[in-house]
Image (tube, rainbow over the protein chains, first blue to last red):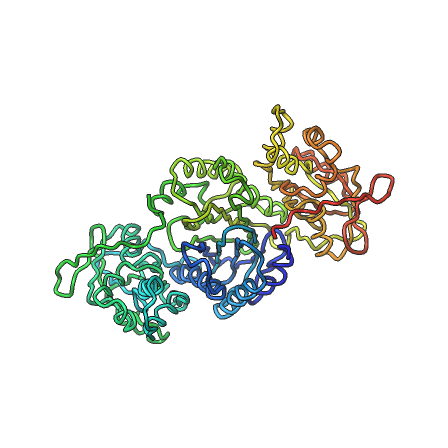
Length: 316
Length: 316
């Protein structure tokens, strides 16, 4: 199979058709209205680093798409188009069929379409560049948090860290808790609609890919503020509590790959953002507040310092 | 060095600033006018496949940018923004400094800017997604060629194939011809201005990445036509003639990586496209004609069939 038949067989028709021109020319062509802003994000998954060498290609495809979609969610953007760069050791039809099926299913359900990319031979690596749109001037940046704002997170934190513990040392008896965490790891839920609803409410937002402390740290740095997180308020799933025990809070603070949103909003908007979440079936939890200064401080409900030793994931 | 300082040190300020928001948030933000269309293309370079494992990182960066720019040239688009996905075995400051310097130099000279991307650890792989703009409805597609059109190419063909021969078996005595070919391979010249000038003249266009026969074949397939290439008319550099001898024509037909434009235009526009090329310092050569049917046929000037055995490069 050469690369042209590979593309024609597995990647020609993925998702709806709103681009002027998709796969099969030198470039994809996309027309935007003047009142819209294009949001663009890129994420790479490398075999042996971000996932085991042998892995269900359908899950891989879906996770890669969702990880990118999560960045759009954190800007308040709607997904539209994506480019796929796929580096493969060989053109294995079974692998490709499963991969493109996973990609097609999630592209359809999230309303985005493949517009082009590149296929090359080499160590298995997947790079996806996702493009979305949002109304001019309404992007959720990392830079707008001010002292007095509340800090909120969607969903539960630390589940993916729990999944890695399960995958690294599979329990002797498989449990529902372990299975729940592993599925959460492979199929994170990008909070797209939540992000879009927060456009005019949140003062800053980021998706939690490197861990709450690290990612909230980015908001603080870009906004020129400090943050105080109350560890007792962190949303922890029953599955994580069952697997992690006493480490659950530490994993919720430092575990990466959750792809939940962390955002700040004026403190008087707390009820509003929780209600929006309820509308959408998304749990929203207030976990702290923005203060003057620099850095992220963890406290317990009584106000004392909480000591944390792990840091968020960094690649180098 | 963690990934955040890696990005801040080497990739924060590359090129001019026309994006609303570049490196350092969840997505880049780009605003387009309603009369403009966005053109998007992605290319990957893999160490050990597309280039030797140890290679001057400055040349690598520039080649990767130029290969993507060539796709924009083939659409008639103007380059604006790019996303970079860089997978590295380690964060080597010397390597990164040279790579980002090469990227910055070419980004500046071609008028595009880095808007974001991803840095990951793993086997050295570079994926670049380039975005450009063009006036609505003026893109140069592969699909517009009709019987009677002339077939034209820019520059010389086969030089990169000659460079690979030199690199595979370095000559005992280095020659100016060998050095010329190797530089052509590493620093192809994307024909951006030529592509833009051809928007209202060419009926179809592609850039020659897989070899003239393969890429002209794509135009034929997408346009539903056949092509006849007169081998004697192929533009061959004196450097290639010196290195390739009798194989020069075969390499000009099948050698990839030249990143020249192949385009079709009404036969009565031949003088016009040559004159546009002369204006821009770009050699334009008529190499054949579009006919009814399918496939690409090679003939000699006397009209007889020319036998060719090599095919263009395919990855799998």
